[in-house]
Every structure is written in structure tokens, then in C-alpha cells.
Length: 389
Image 1 (cartoon, rainbow, N blue to C red):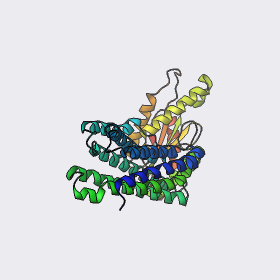
Image 2: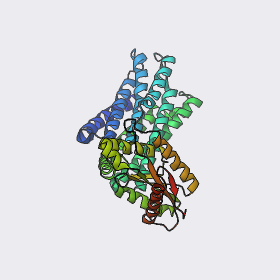
Image 3: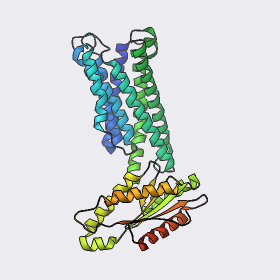
Image 4: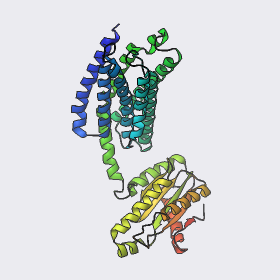
């Protein structure tokens, strides 16, 4: 069996090779967020591994804590890469927590003489970031499945599954490593045989190779996803455009066999606002309403801008009282966001109808639209429920 020192040299060499391939073959080509995060993970992992080679020398006192920081940061970058696949930003404070705790623990545990200084914090941090990455990969798979596979081809789908399995396996490995480190300690034979330095280095080499060679497909999928988002989103509000809203809502209505609520919302006297204050004021009103919609939406709700000043929401509940309460909360939040520069900032009229089993999207939209026009006739700035609901 190869000794740990040889394996660490091999790991550093593999990381350096994969870094060059990733940077030249993927990142320079598309500059995608995923490839940027993964390139950062390779850099931190490779440099951290190289620094561990100074264990047993006078440089260990500085090299070991820095290597621990970089190892924790590599796991955090893996989490950032996974989040980028669904268009989510990664909070830098959360990225910094694991490395910060790791370096503090490393400095407290005499790194000049203890090669395991800070490793409890390191293993827990890495396991946490990797489980977070696994959760994000599961979310990516679910979102693409719910979109009907529109945003990824079969090769990218397979890459997503492979990457998710790989991240889960690595997260489980570091969870076991953390538990054994805390329970029996790093010098126990059980720790050495199962999750010791040799086994960990081999696992990391395999993981780096697997993840890097799925990166091209994942990066391509992300590029396609970004193009699709641009084609299917309303550029002003960021909500789905009419075609994409109807596609997604139709699929959701069919899948849930009803058990949803349709809401149609229309800004009142919108033309008058544009005429009196210019189109910029109208745009601000649309953006403010879209922002209020996003705050009011649940994780399984769908919202889109389906006309000039008309919006539609499909709420994942068939309880008309719950739906009405949520729409009332939306109405109040938007009302509090009024533009001081435009005294007649438009109010909004809402029509609500329950999507019954057997309903199609078109009939639900017609009923909600009719209820919305009733709200306008009755004085605007109110929520009206369809009489059949």
C-alpha cells in the first residue's frame, strides 16, 4: 500500500492537473459561476494538500493551520458550486464560518507539535459544507424535474446525478471521520483503518476526478439554463413571462389534480400613472409589485407577468381562506411600498379562484380574471373571490 506522504504528493499533482484542465477547458471558455467555484475549490484543495507535506518540519506551525483553512474553504467552494447550478448566490459570511472556526481551533491545539490540531473543527466543517452541497444538488435535480427537463439534456441529467451521489458519499465519509475522531481519537486503529490519512487521500483523489470530469456537462447545463431563464423571464420584474407561467402552471395543475388557487392581479389606473409621471414611474410600480409577490410566494407557488400590468399567481393551496389571507398580506405589503415621488402610486385589484379537480389552466384563469374585474367594479384595491370557490 502507498504511504500517506506519497498519496498526498499524488493528490497535489492530481489537483494541479485538474485545475489546469478545468481552467483552460471550461472556465476560460464560458466563465460560468459553477466552473469559477469549482476552480476555486481545486486551488484551495491542491494548495492545502501541498502544505500538509510540511508536517514534521519547522514550517508545520504555520503550514498546518493554513492547510486546514484551505481544506475547509475547498468544501465551502463545493457548496458554492452546487448553489450556483440553481442560480443561488452563496453568502460569504457562511463560507467564512468553517475556515474561521477551524483556524481558531488549530491555533489553540499547538500546531507546532500536533499534526491533528484543529481537525475536529475541520472535519465537522467539511461534513457540513458537503451535506449542504448535497442538499443543493438534490434541489437542482428536483427543480429540473419539475420544469419538465427543459433546462438540461440527458447527459447533463446524468452528470447531476453522478455529482450528487459523489458529494453525498464524500459528505458521509467526512461525517464518519468527524464522529470517529471525536469518539475514539485519531490514533485509534479503528480510525486509521477506516478513515485515516491514506483512505481520505484516496477518497479525495477519486472525488476530484469524478467531479472535474462532470464539470464540463454541468457548466454547459448552467449556460443553457441561463439562456432559458433569459428567454422565459420578464426582463423588468424577473417573474416568469406569460408563456413560461402558463407552461409551468399547466404542468402543476395537471400534477396536483386541482388542489391549487389561481390569482389574477392587475394594477389600477396604470395608464394614468404612466401619463402623469412617465414610464419610469410605471416601471417602479411594476418592480415594487413583483418584489412584494416574491416575498409572499411559498416555495411551490408560481408567479408570472402575463400582460402589461397584469400578473398571475398559482398558489399551492386549495384552502380559499388561506389563499385569500396570503393575497391580503401581499396587497398590504405592496401598499406599504408606495413611491413618494408618485402620489397616485397605483393600487392593485385581485381575483381569486380555487382550481378544482378536472379544471384546466385556461378555465381557472378566466374565473380569476372575472373576479379581478369585479374587484375593479367594486372600487379597486381589494381582493374578490370567485363565487364558485
